[in-house]
Every structure is written in C-alpha cells, then in structure tokens.
Image 1 (cartoon, helix red, strand yellow):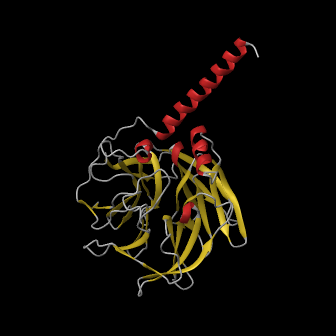
Image 2 (cartoon, one colour):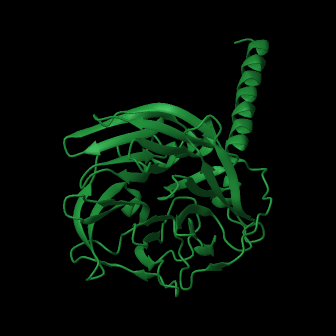
Image 3 (cartoon, one colour):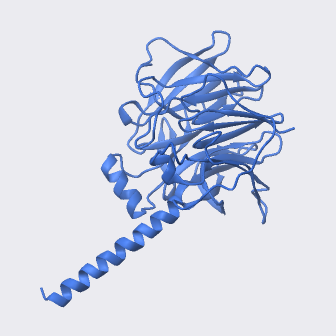
Amino acid sequence: MGTLLKITIVGLLLALLGERIMNLCHRARIFAEVNPVELPNCQLLKGLESGSEDIDVLPNGLAFLSTGLKYPGVVSFTPDKPGEILLLDLNDGSLNASPLRLSEGFDVASFNPHGISLYTDEKDGSVYLFVVNHPQLQSIIEIFKFEQEENTLVHLKSVRHKLLNSVNDIVAVGPESFYATNDYYFSNLNMKFVEFLLGLSWTGIVYYSPGDVRHVATGFYSGNGMAISNDRKYIYAVDLTSHTLNVFEKHKDWSLTPVKSVKVNMLLDNLSVDPDTGDIWTAGHPNLFKVFVYNPEDLPGSEVVRVQNIHSDNPIVTTVYANNGSVIQGGSCASVYKGQLLVGTVFHRAMHCQLE
C-alpha cells in the first residue's frame, strides 16, 4: 500500500472519529449548563437516599416509587442495599414514603427496580404493578398484584424474552401484557458502549403478551420513558439522546403508527400524564455526561418539563423547574396529583412541590 493511500485512509478514519465524537457530544449535551427555574413550596422527602427512578400514581393518590437502582456507569449511594418499591399517600400531608413488603419466595436480595407501570383491571378493580428488574444486570419484567390492606406486593410472574434484552421502561396494558422500551440494542456492556459511541439508532418499542411478542417501533438511539394517553389511544415514548418525545397511535392489534415527534431541549427520562388535563410531565438531564461521570464538585442537574397540547400543531413545552444539582441531582421523573408535583431521580432524592 502506498504512503499516500495510507495517509488518506488514516485521515478519513480520523475525520470519521471526529464526526462521531462531535455527534456524541451533541447527543449527550456535555457542554450544557442549567438555567435555574425555581418553584416555591418544595421539600425533599425524608429518609429517601437511594433514588426514585420512576413514579406512578393511582387515581386515589397512592404513589409508587422505584428506588435503589444500580445501573452500569451511574453512581449509587447505597451500593450494598437491595432496591425497593416505596408507597406514598399524597393525601397524607406527612409525606412519609414506606417500603412495600414483597411476597415470600421473591428474590429480594437481587431486586434492582428500574421503570414501573400500574394497571387496574376494570373487571374487578385489581391493581397490578409491573417492574423492570435488573438482577445481575439482566432485564426481567416482574408482575405483582398490590394488596393494600397487607401493604404487600404479591409476585405473580417473571417475564423474560430475547426481545426484552435491555429494558428501560414499560406501559402495562393488561394483567399480563405491556409495551417496553429498550435503551440499547446489545446486552453486552462493551457492545453497549460501542453502540452509544457510534450513535446507532437500533432500539425501539416491544409489545409483549403471553402469545405475542414483537417490535412495534424502531429507529431510536436509546428508548427510555413511556406513558399512555388518558383515552388509551396513544403511546408516548422518549428517545433519550435524540431529545425527542414521540407520539404513536395504538391500534386494536397492538401495533403502533408514528404520529409526531416533539423536540425538547434536554435529555428526557420517564413520562407521566396528568389525569385531569392530559399534559405530559417529564424530568430529565440537562447534561448526560455529568450523570455518568459523577463529580461532587460539578453535580448533575435536574429539569422538569410540562408538554401541553401534544396532539396540536403547536405543543407548548415549558420548563417548570431546573436546578444545577444543589438541591436535587439526576432528575428522572415527574408526576402530578391534585396540584402536587413529585420529582424523582436516578440515584439521589425525591422532591415534593405544591403547584397550587
């Protein structure tokens, strides 16, 4: 091979690498800083030090919080403590979140909860909690039945499938069926890093029921938070590093059709829908680099965003709260109930605010 050809090939490779690095910097927003937005009447929940990665709220005000997530590359302040599901009654002004007991026989020691979703059976009112669980870095969907009088989650089923290889979040649509996002195409940690570095858009949404498992949306860089519209006709799903909130129409055969994509100027995480207005609430990361390279001198911030009129030609995107990490770090979810706002985090605290 001639010298000139070698120089040309090296130059092309360096140019490609440089382009990929710049693309990565953009997707991770590694140079972004927080423009603070304050909210009055906010307080951190007491006794919650292990994160509150996802939150889902029943119509009666009972909030379920996923806490204690151990995620590759992300700091944990309680590395030796198993994860838990906490219960918080938003009608009780004391705001004390307490752990739910998990039924006998479930492997509590390896419990590593991530995204969660509630489902209420219209036939008998039974409440089911679906939990993305990562024991030994696997992806398993755990299905529990909530027994309120016993303050217990009764474990019913563990779901494993090759298409559910790196699950981030779920939306339950039946007692045994759900939609799930994968945040990576690969399961191997080294390949995940390569996938992220190269900016491969190979992830998406999987539909699961006992007799039907399939991809229903593809082309995401990193599938993340999900929610379902109040009329249950649409699925909302985040593509984390494309900074988009995506809307899909849900069909009777459970397939999804893309409707629109709304750009939001941050790295969106989990989603929730206001039960009264249909507004979409989310929290996320101003700068993803600070989440994965934790520096106590330069903390990862949090942002809370509300998206109004998502189905109109001009959705309204409003930053409701933004903090540089001095109060709350690594924001990952936001849920509202009767004028109250709950903000959760990947690994830090949880915050409650009165909006009215």
